[in-house]
Length: 95
Image (cartoon, rainbow, N blue to C red; front, side, top):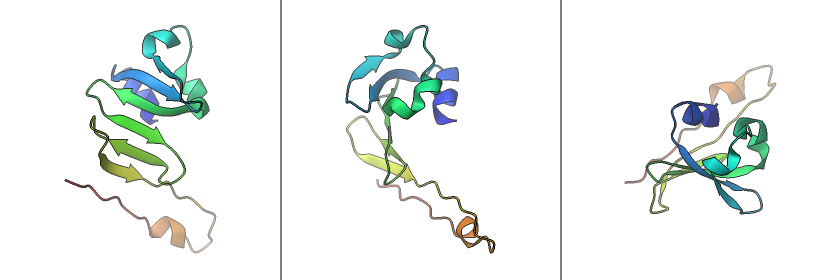
């Protein structure tokens, strides 16, 4: 969803894959980055921010200096009581 929205709004300038190979959006001409999302480690946006996909946290947001702006931890479960769905951790913004 994040990548699709960034592409729609023409915000993406580069990608880094899981082998740490960087490529520009032009390198992806004729390809669908959304279909290859599992191979993308990070996305660089026009303003220099970087969105990193990893395991802890699931998504990390960095400014152009590499400082952490925030993170997203995606939680889901099949708990009948819905405890996991009700207790959702937020993120810390450092300034």
